[in-house]
Image (cartoon, rainbow, N blue to C red; front, side):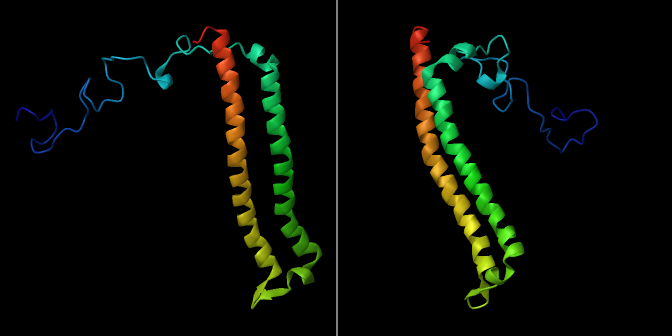
Length: 149
């Protein structure tokens, strides 16, 4: 049969993609620019000199704002997370206190850790939007300095 390859039964269809077919991962012909993930090191040039960016007041403010949020949030998360095993070990009678039927304080505290993590993630998402805005303003300033490129 004409469509069969050597060593394959004639009834089976070869699923190997053809060169320059629409299903190819990297087609031979291209009408636009290469996607970012296919660029070589020479083609993928930064829009800024990073020493210049690091020296910008706006960038320093962005880093300081992130630290003001991330460091306290991390300390709070770790303290809250480690408080359960500490309380179970140091105050077992308190943690055995029944709250709802057979559910004791230790179980409720453990359950609260899930809610605390979700709430903290939600707060971070809101704050990340602020950080993104600060970053976009830095990029816009850099592009304006380079003539809008």
